[in-house]
Length: 325
Ligand code: ADE
Ligand code: ZN
Image (cartoon, rainbow, N blue to C red; front, side):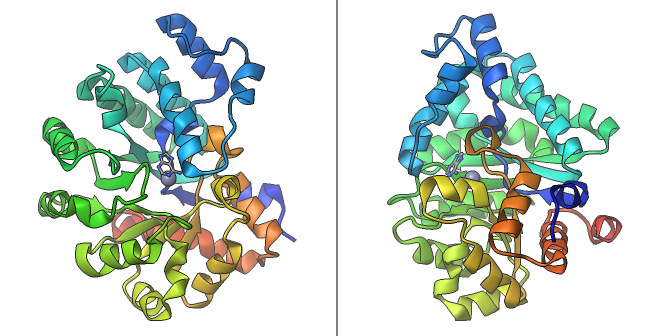
């Protein structure tokens, strides 16, 4: 039987976490007050009551306005440092953390404010034995030009970013929309990932584009790949990682996609559970492992395999992997 203590103590890598999605109600209210931002709620209960969503669009409609409370370098530092403490509690040894610069720059917060705050927390996190990196995500429902401008703004901070990703609304925004950006990022030595969401329209064709054309090393969610078993075999052979988010799935679809996870495990695909937006979806990484393990009766061996998978597809050296695994 899998216990909460067992999954909590299991060393793991967090590879699918939006830092803006770790903004807990308490910090949100405190920053709103400090920065004089009216978020429409004044108590924790009111904030929690506003968390009503049943699909990606309704979630994003709550998620983006909340970010307005983040204004200064210190705010971003505090946000990321609170996450580092959660990482410690959850035995996360290595974290690759998404951030959405466009969501901040569009409301007048500079790229440097965002990255300086986040990066300082990463430096200070090393003393707590959490090794963290940043993945810059482009909002895929925004223009290619906006992504390009964001890329340009990031260039002075190139050594603080390990990879790029795509998030936000996938509907009618295929990965190939950003093909030139992926090519340029790869040329500069960055790793590539992208969301290819479970029940989005065209999910399997987006997964094909990512694997066959763009050549990503991971896909965020992406469990719909089970619709094409040839592609599953290819993903297994080439060690492509799939970062599934059990608790966030339950908000936007009927189940945690556990059956798909089991199929991927059976075929040797490197799938692992992660948190997505833990302040909004009810739990950090151990909660996600635990929910998946109990709902689908996973064996201890399978749970350990999931954690090993997370290190196997992390963007770290083989030497580092050997230490963690
Ligand atoms: N941005 C933050 N969380 C997201 C999610 N679950 N899907 C797409 N974009 C996101
Ligand atoms: Zn996500």
